[in-house]
Image (tube, rainbow, N blue to C red; front, side, top):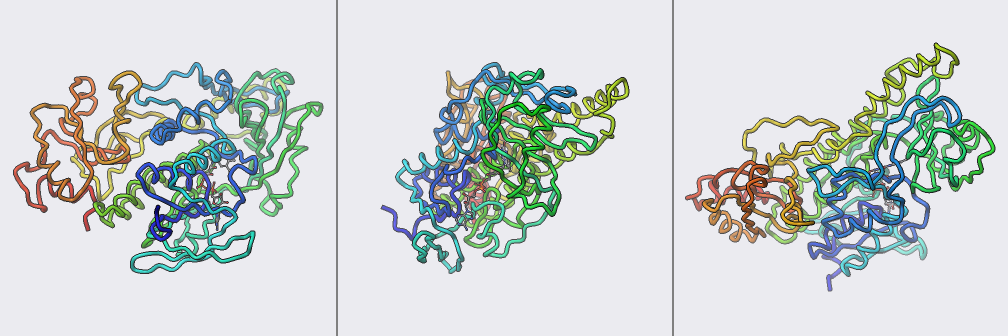
Length: 546
Ligand SMILES: Cc1cc2nc3c(=O)[nH]c(=O)nc-3n(C[C@H](O)[C@H](O)[C@H](O)COP(=O)(O)OP(=O)(O)OC[C@H]3O[C@@H](n4cnc5c(N)ncnc54)[C@H](O)[C@@H]3O)c2cc1C
């Protein structure tokens, strides 16, 4: 039984808050999740739906990949994006993407990307966190303020049903409370960036939409007018629930009361298609990043640390990466083998990834609305056809990185991190669409099958892992140095030439989050037992020794 004061306090029971609680529970760490709503999944939340390959790898680690992949949406529904003037207007072009059943899994991952809307995902994560027995959830409770002391944080919460104050003490508080984060504001961390537009989405039920238009089934229809993309209709469940988004509404509009009925009819191109608007949601499209993800004992993860235009579907994927990046760090520091600098390293590593991913998303957004003259797209006759050909060519090229973002998903690296040991090799290209595996320090450790259904990445997740590809490699000094600091380290010899070639060096040290911390053909200065050099110094570095 964990005393309340020992539990990590997670403010915000959204997907990132529960994923962090789950990651901590996997490490045997107890947490309390504070959520202002009365439960999880009470509203039909249909924001994130695209879960990239790296996220699916994390879900694999947390034991939920199968449930996320097979929650009930059809496997044979095409994931194409079709550009058109309306469903009954002109087809401009299509960016094809195979359905889950036909998609070829990239060689570099055991998972394919998936579609799972938040109204399915969030309750699933909440349920699994609850089942761990290590996660306490306080619903109908809001975070109000905090005071940091030398060895703990005191937080004042309020139960909104009973209107009573709940005081909690915790070793660390993590703000997973979304873009308007009260935690971030409470500690005065600046949130810098820009608003790109204000948009409003309607969740719409339309049965058998494909029966009413000639464009065929697609996951997304983008509606193009003389000023560029003005709306899109995206399938939420690959069945009958759609999200219709009007891009860039007037800055003065009251987003919550906007009625999109007329815009939707314009997009459908006819007004006899039966539909039901389930709810409207106004939102601000922005690219903002917190100045730091750590201030003392307070940390940020998810939208609390970064906002991202949904163009590309990187927001939640980035937030789940934060959860995976933070869980092991908190566990390390609380266990005593990790030093406080690990917390700063978390902030630096994930902040740079957030900037990288949100910049890619903003670039996708700009391609939607600019970059070419759209004025002739509605014209009939040869001039209209030519204008639409130009727009198709522009969108095919400019939006390629949005529909093909494997590089964004997999290629982020922590090579500038203070707890990663550079080997002096130059950075590999960081292309939004292309990902090439490498064991270069800071990168995700490569995937290869060890046996049927068992990947090298399944070796990672709890402590550090030293992969040894040579029977001659002497790794004893590293084992000893780790043991001296109680750093959990397991050595795994691998006698497979293809995997050895993929990993490029005879010894590769992988962190609990699956990223390479160090690599070499021999331990540095293997004879030395001094903390300032050799294997001992390596351990000091990767554990963030003060
Ligand atoms: C239209 C749209 C489409 C999107 N599509 C994708 C996609 O396909 N893929 C993707 O990766 N991302 C996508 N995103 C982004 C994604 O939805 C967010 O990045 C994600 O929801 C962030 O999760 P979070 O847990 O950090 O924050 P949130 O989901 O905002 O959760 C925060 C939680 O904290 C609670 N809370 C807030 N304040 C307090 C308080 N003071 N006390 C207690 N609780 C509090 C809230 O009730 C909420 O439950 C999309 C976003 C939009 C708008």
